[in-house]
Image (cartoon, rainbow, N blue to C red; front, side, top):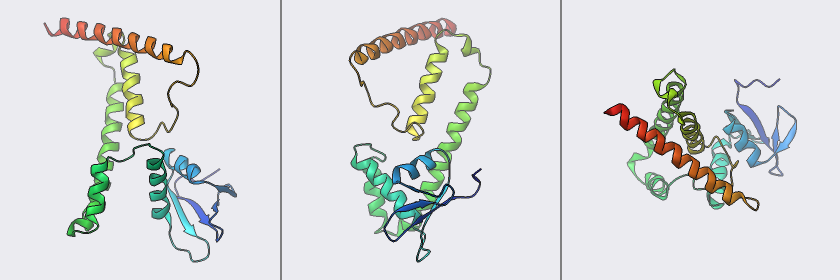
Length: 184
């Protein structure tokens, strides 16, 4: 069984192939991205020199997702990152980004916890559907869903999506009506 407390060690061979030392097999960048999405820390080292290549490969994963049209970072953030390399702010940027992502993770955890606590809103019809949608949205925003949804893939799927959307709209209207009654 793998020790998930220690970073997963990936060795890069001279042929540029990446080798997972836990499973004794070769992996791709997408495999590494999957390990990370699953909450695993990863360390990538050059077999010959021992140099840590983790940062280089993580940037490559982000760049590949960006090139596929999967916008990971807004252009304004990318522009600010490039600017930070030529300013005195360079030393502050990594700490700021790390603190920002830590705050995002904390607030997401607290939000999910608060949604699971017994809440009088849970008795409102349609609340569970709204809660599930919000959780899915948060997961998507933090990269935990990966590419599970890629839009309609078969005939009739668009019609199903429209029906789902109509049902959600009805549920939201009912929820809003009940909230309005409660507020009076």
